[in-house]
Image (cartoon, rainbow over all chains, first blue to last red; front, side, top):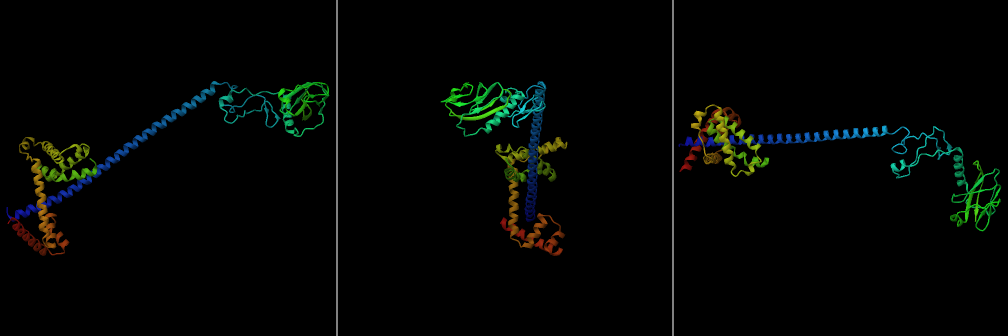
Length: 236
Length: 165
């Protein structure tokens, strides 16, 4: 092999090396593109899976919502209009009632909304007895009793307590604790004995044992018509 | 095998694969196509490559099979099957190594030449530029380029003669 052939071989080798380097760079770029395409395809698959999951989740949630609404409607349809509501306080009561807070006699169109105690469960509230229908007399009694309880003096007089009643009928005496003591008498003069409460007609009102130890008492005399005829209090 | 490892271990085998394909197909462009197809196939099965003991033999065998398929597709099976120039893995490796050594020897010889002669020779015979490109790159007339290249070739011949001795 002469020198020219040697030189040609050397240059041929150099050319091949250059071509291989270019070709390897192209292949390396091709591998990068393939890897990038695979990554994009993978992320697309993941997004597609995620979208499918949320689609199914949305459908399931819609079905549950529709089912709950349907059950609610069915439960309401199964009850008669005058039946108790499922949850107390959610349905008006078509009864005559008393607005106990305002003290105003209610008409037939008035509605009483039962007030639930804190933490009271709806089931317990539902099991409560229906709203009581009160007569006008009893409503007046309640109102006057409430006023009496507010106006009861804290310092009781030492003198015998007097209470007169112009009409016949039982007189109800209410002591400090709110218990009622009834006796038929008119006019009524309360006298203090050792530990007994007596009235002028000689009637001895019944004093319950639990009240005997109470040194103080308060009472309200109310006629049979519901009129307050006397209030007072004292000490045994 | 991840991307970085693939580029580190497989890409350098391109020289041997290209040489083998050229040898079997007798065409540089067809050989480049075959090698590229083999690289795509290797990338698609890169998870299996970690279990391959001899990666170079594995890759060269893939090139051989692809070359045979291409030759059969050309409907020259009956003729070419008798004349396919098979190269063993060892022969391919030796030829690739020889090429690398020759290129490295040329680099050393060129480094001993003056800069203008070295650049003129590299542009003329390695990069295969035309004379006008070399004139503009070296800011020289065509006569000067011709003279410079002639002197550089003579210097190389002298150096090669010295090496043989």
